[in-house]
Image (cartoon, rainbow, N blue to C red; front, side):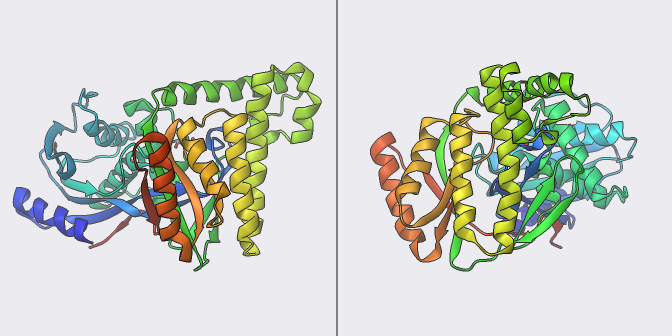
Length: 384
Ligand code: GLA
């Protein structure tokens, strides 16, 4: 809670009052990649890396923000919201913009924040900013917005104001996450199942490639439209089909001749990935972590060969992990083209694995990957 104390102190110094303190976590996704915007299943968890907000209401319409980690100050009026050249305020302004559009009255606020979610690593620091602020404003202004509406509002802030066409997974897990639990989110009904993820012999270890290839956002949008093309073709034969969620592998195969080869591979990956999420949850119910780990490898292979969103650095880390006897599952995580791999590692082997993967990566790419050992924590909540 060092960071919580840091933001509280800075807040008191700047604004001379006691703030509300809110913790808003980053996330991992165990399995179920590129399925959220295809109305499928995902299996994320909130983690012990977070953004901490210190916040209080104002009555003069001003929003005063201080980002400790950037040592940067920004202020604006609730009534005049404009996209900024400087990036970080946009995540926060986007939320106020959505509240304005929803007719929810806020009258300004003071806010100081700081976090330990590594930026650009694919751990959803942006969703933590958006959903964390939406949650905080809902509380200090007593807006009465339910949790799912907060999730949707935060996602819209990212889609419409920040301009990133992400799915709903990151904001959802930020708000609904729970300790020692992964969530199987149904991205069509927006309902979720809570599955305990408890195995004291295992740890979730992330290896950060330290690269973000510039392709990431354009290819993300391309994948979305390729999946939509697949759905359109299938709809010609069955108008009931609304998304790849409505398509079985058999049905997809029966239309192979009608579908372009690349589109076919994209759709096949998504259909199979949805199945893997469901089967992984059955593995968890049986505490069968070995099968769970196998499915993570299968997911990686699909992301690499069929969905083609991996990159050589991610493949290297996942493959090295595969050959190591310290790891039971590994795959790239998130949108792809950089960021982290997620690995399930025997607790007793974590140090050895870290040394092994750092050396291997350094030998190949001349720099060490950053390695994070994560705990599953609760979603966004008040800490004071
Ligand atoms: C990014 C997006 C998510 C999801 C993943 C891929 O993290 O923000 O909505 O689509 O990529 O699974």
